[in-house]
Image 1 (cartoon, one colour):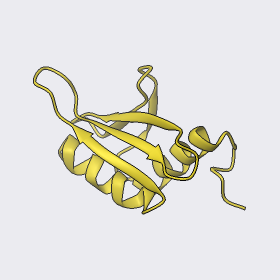
Image 2 (cartoon, rainbow, N blue to C red; image 1 turned 90 degrees about the horizontal axis):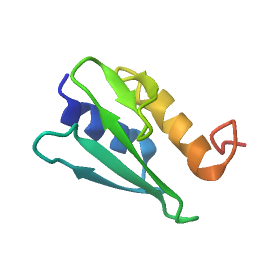
Image 3 (cartoon, rainbow, N blue to C red; image 1 turned 120 degrees about the vertical axis):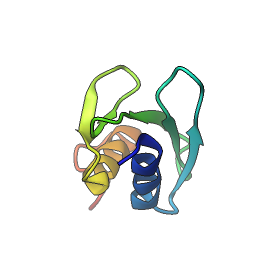
Image 4 (cartoon, rainbow, N blue to C red; image 1 turned 180 degrees about the horizontal axis):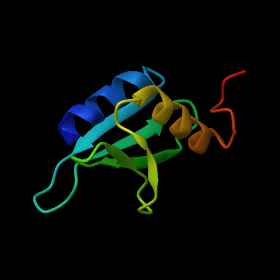
Length: 87
């Protein structure tokens, strides 16, 4: 799977509660800017061609074949909850 395709799947997994924008620049990994529509908190996630999502601080997030697990992690980061904000 290509990195942009993995980011598209992640954007879909996040759903309408989040604003997502894919950024592509020559010489850089594609990245998805994610903002929580209710809180305004934002982060970005990168994807590579080796099947990994990456946090902007260069730590691996999850594998790209599980965009829902990555969405859950992102929601937790943006909402400051270990369960991803699901209650």
